[in-house]
Structures are given as structure tokens and as C-alpha cells.
Length: 247
Ligand code: SF4
Ligand code: SF4
Ligand code: FES
Image 1 (cartoon, protein in one colour):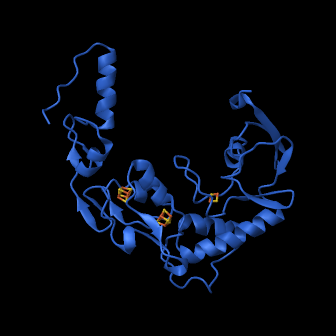
Image 2 (cartoon, rainbow, N blue to C red):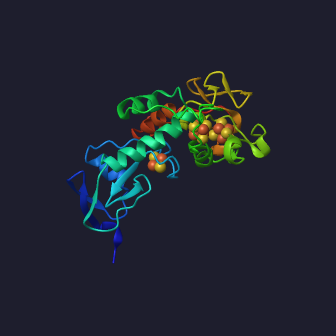
Image 3 (cartoon, rainbow, N blue to C red):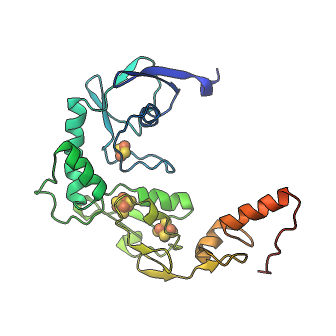
């Protein structure tokens, strides 16, 4: 049987849904126009389910909606039941203790009427240990950083808590970080305590990325995405393409 076309039906907050078999509860809720708060989830990265902010109730159970695949008909989910809200408030207190100044968390805390747990704010550094940066680095093609250490010592760093020596300066980690914990600048490029050169596009002169990042991408004679699109359109219309300088 071809499973890709199978549909699953159920309800979220009393609203009926019909979703592709295996779709996540989070995506399905979004499709109904419902909002479930998330933090470790990023639509372009593999899910990890570690922050627990997206908890939803189903029959007295709490489920991380970003990780929950819809596989059975007739399930009913509640995104804002007392149990779900209580669990979310608990998670939020812990996250706020890590990142007490984060605007998104403060907004949610205001809605739910919670504050950071003062017993846990010691050592708050703005990082909620969600691992989005690590997943972004991997998705970009490097494995320069990881969550290292245990307990309160746990943090994002290169191997052995050192600066990430394999970092190519692409800044994917910093762009993916939901709390802005990773300090960086786009131009001039600086991240993880290192300054990187930026290679200009040979056609328009706009910065394309660091030389290390372009080598990682393995593209010969790279041009920036805008020029690539323009050259591609020209080739479709039969117009002469730009000549690239010799490497
Ligand atoms: S800047 Fe460095 S650590 Fe961050 S994603 Fe790119 S390679 Fe990884
Ligand atoms: S640095 Fe940012 S993305 Fe990485 S674990 Fe901390 S909060 Fe998450
Ligand atoms: S967003 Fe689902 S567990 Fe973090």
C-alpha cells in the first residue's frame, strides 16, 4: 500500500482536521490557524523536541507537538487545556531562568502570568540549550559545535569547550539561535571570537560568504544567489550570460 497518500483525521481544540499520515501535530495545528508556542523547533531543521514548550494534551497525556506524528484516526488534542497550560508555564519558568531577557519568552510569560524561577536564575546566560545552533551547523555541512558538558556546565562550544576550530564562519548557527545568544556580525564577518574575510560576488561585488564557507559548498566559480537567478533567467531567454573571471 502506498502510505504517502494516506490521511489521518481527528480534532484539535474541537476543530476537525484531515492531515497526511505522519504529519506532525504542530504543522497540522498551524494549518488550522492555531498557535502553539515553540522554541527548539525550526521548520528548516530536523526536530529535536528538547524544549517542551510546545506541549499539548491528548486524553490526559502531554505530547511535544513538534515531534508527534499523526498516525491514528480519531485522536483529540487540546492546545490550551488547564493541563497543557500548566505544563507550558512550568517549562517557561525553566527557560526564563536560562534566558530572562528574551523578548519572545517574556511575551509568553506575560500571557501565562509566570516569571522565572528565582532559584534557577543563577548562571543565566541567555542560552536555553535548545541545540538549534548545533543542528544548523550540521545542516550547513559542518560539525564545528556541540552541546558539551553536563548539568549546569552544559553549553554550546567547540570540542573540549574550546573555540570551534572547524568553524567556517557561515553564521548559520547564530541566525538559527532563537535567543540571540551567539554574538556575531554579518559584515565584517565575525563569530566565535574569529574574524573572517568575505568573498565578493564576481558579478555584482556583494559579499557571498567566507572563502571557507564557499569551499565547503564546493561550488566552482560561485556567484551570489541574486546573480545566479538573473544569469539563469538570461540563459532561459537565450541572452548572453556574463563571463566569469578565471578562478
Ligand atoms: S559559523 Fe561556524 S559554528 Fe556556526 S554554523 Fe557556521 S561553521 Fe558552524
Ligand atoms: S546558543 Fe542559541 S541555538 Fe544554541 S543552544 Fe543556546 S539558545 Fe539554542
Ligand atoms: S518546540 Fe517542541 S519540544 Fe521544543
